[in-house]
Length: 339
Image 1 (spheres, rainbow, N blue to C red):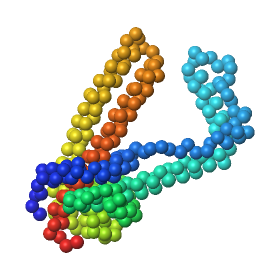
Image 2 (image 1 turned 90 degrees about the vertical axis):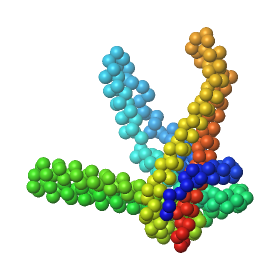
Image 3 (image 1 turned 60 degrees about the horizontal axis):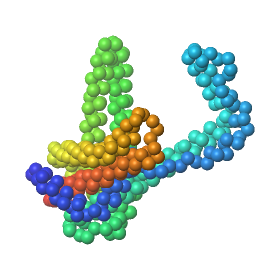
Image 4 (image 1 turned 30 degrees about the horizontal axis):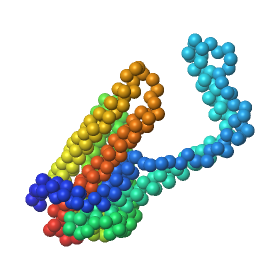
């Protein structure tokens, strides 16, 4: 494969991104969920716990007579109060709380997997249609996500399994080498541990890089060609051989360009929104520091929220753009291959 025209890829993807604004919805979903941010939460029904009789006899304060000018004793008494509280809460309540937390974590994880997998599939398929100059709506692109989200979840589990098995193998090799070295001398053991540890770390890092590249191809094989997860991994590895440098360069371009644009957008937003914030702050605190008035507080909170949601939208657009870059790059790579 000859070196692709990266500048043309970036420009064509940029034009497609701004022409197909419905795809920003998928970018926003990935920005919120894949970026580690989520909306809402569940506090659970903990109201009945406060009525439990075991809470009635808990210490309410540090015992009287504790000298407050001796921090160590105050801290010790505080710890004792906390320990007494923990001891008096029934084990059944701790078990219920633990199960509740696990259920919430599991539920949020499943929701995150489903939403990100659906959004990723819909975005890859939608970009393919957009690049083919088709009309783009949520209705005619969401089917890509619905058809592929299960396979994306399985693909994620497969890659996670590969990573964990590889890590276990590398750690086992290092441990075995260290044990063998210890049979001869402490010095030899330390040397072997350092060498095998370094080699293992480099090997693991390279494997993660290869898996990341393979996943880029596998995602598109699943959405655009209907591959099953394991077949997509094998075919993606076959495709990626001979294209490592080009793929790495495309990845570097994506990371640098999106980071620079993201930083510039944040600076612009801070300048634009910082001016009214500064005006409000100066007028509010010109007579000295005090709790701000309700109107000033609401205005500052609204400005802060505008900044946060503006950054989410910028991130959504950049996600769509980088996905478009990968779609065009993938198209160049598989142009002459039989799929």
